[in-house]
Amino acid sequence: MSAAPLLETRALTLRAAGRVLVDSLAWRVHAGERWCVIGRNGAGKSLVLRALAGLGVPERSGDVLWQGRPQADWPVGAAATLRALMPQQAQDRFALTVERVLALSEVATSAPRPRPAELLSALDIASLSDRRVDQLSGGERQRVALAQCAMQGAALMLLDEPVSFQDPAHQQVVGRWLTQAATPESGDRAWIASAHDPSWIARVATHVLALFGDGRWQAGRVDEILSAPVLEQTYGCAWRSVEGAWLPA
Amino acid sequence: MLATRSMPARDPAVLRIAVLALATALVAALALGLGAGGWDWPLIVTLRAPRVAAAAGVGSLLALAGLALQVLLRNPLADPYVLGHSGGASVGALAALLLGLQLWIGAAAGALVAGLLLLWLARPALAAADDASPKLILLGTMLAAIFGAVSTLMLALVPDQRLRGAIFWMVGDLSGADASLWHLAGSAVFVAWLWARGRSVDRLMLGADAAWLLGEPVRRLRLELLVFASLAVGLAVSTSGSVGFVGLVVAQGWRLAGVLRTRELAVLSMLSGAALLMGADLLARIVVAPLELPVGAVMALIGAPCFIWFLARGLK
Image (cartoon, rainbow over all chains, first blue to last red; front, side, top):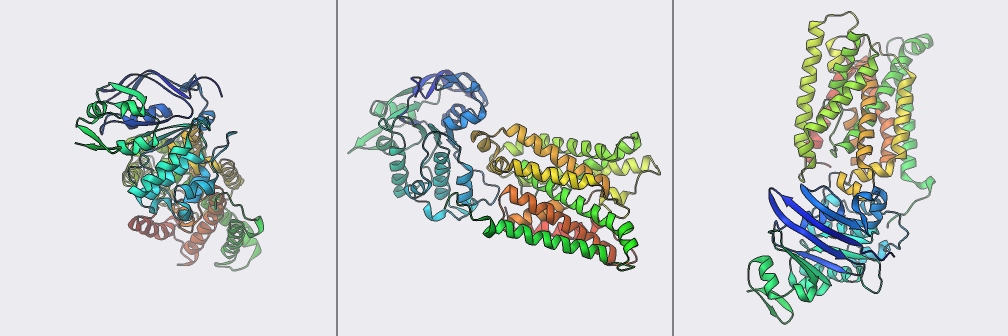
């Protein structure tokens, strides 16, 4: 692998509806890292993920580099082997089956891809294979969307709220899978996910990017960012840590 | 599980296509044989065969155009007639006739303009996260109404011997239609293109953003879909006028039957579109013989209730 970080932003500024949401973001994500993006509703988490994926956003300036190369220089096919995006809400208009949707998400890459059977059982969706995606529950559809993202086999997975619809047990299931999906030992992969629960984040992430909603941000290792002052600045309410779990006071 | 490929011989797709090909041939034989005069070879060859061939060609083109528009607009209820493409083609064809240009070129250009107009008008709805179906269909219906009014005005203001009557342009009619190799060649090229692009078109069903993220050249793909659909509608309308609902009934019917792959849908749509319109035209010829009904009216009586049924059940 090249020495350049998997993802780098230089002075990335995002605006929406006349407000600066992210100001001059200078950020590096390396293979093996697991990042969570936190911020209040409307702070720009989804917008950041869209911009990182290369999708259109209302107003942006600055640069996003994938493996040291500007986003715009990547051909659309090559980009698909580098980054995948799981949207917050899948838009199913046709009655496709889970199996079909997953098969369509495969992108030929040289990198080893997850084995479908293992992936499906790890995400507890093996029994849904023949079901229609538009008839799944919100939580089931979300886990299928995560599997789609994984099937793409990209080095960098961008996940917009991967556990927002998950019950507590499945938050654990998804968390366990995400924890082993990018590790420093295995080397060539990373993911960035927006999430809300600091306790869950503390278990699965290695790093956190906190968006304060007014353009300011702070990025760092998970134990640096998940602290009472930063969480208070992020969410506007006090936090305390009780036996490793974060609770709003 | 994933990526299983059954043996070709046991593939339900191959079986479906084979059965359907036989059924299509049977409908063709019936359409050739039934009617006043019965099995009379000179009659069949000179009179009935061109009309049956025209019905088959127009039916397959319209079914394929419906399939392409459904993916392009991400709306399983899309149909060139309902959404105003056929109306645009009628106006284009009338304009071409008045200007002394090739009929089908004018019709294809009209369909293309109608398609671009709909895409442009529906852009906010298509980009929105919520289901764009109702807005899209209402917009298309209004476009169809506008084009219908323009056609009527052109027919009223420019009474011309060369222009066929309002019924032809509004609901479609196959009496006097002539077969042309262009229809069959057009259908074959359209199916071949859908086959070659099958996986990309399948991915487009996941959404434009999703397809782009998977590495598909979405913009070019959507443009190609629109151009192919417009050429098909243009060829069909210049032969039979605006026959509706073939694309809706055929492509959506197969989807409801569980066929989801574009490749298989394309072949099945071509065959069943041909069979459906040959059958509808057969009904149009024999139900009140010796009088003839316009085939478009028969098709609307079959298709519009299907549309209402699809819509009411909220089927995808």
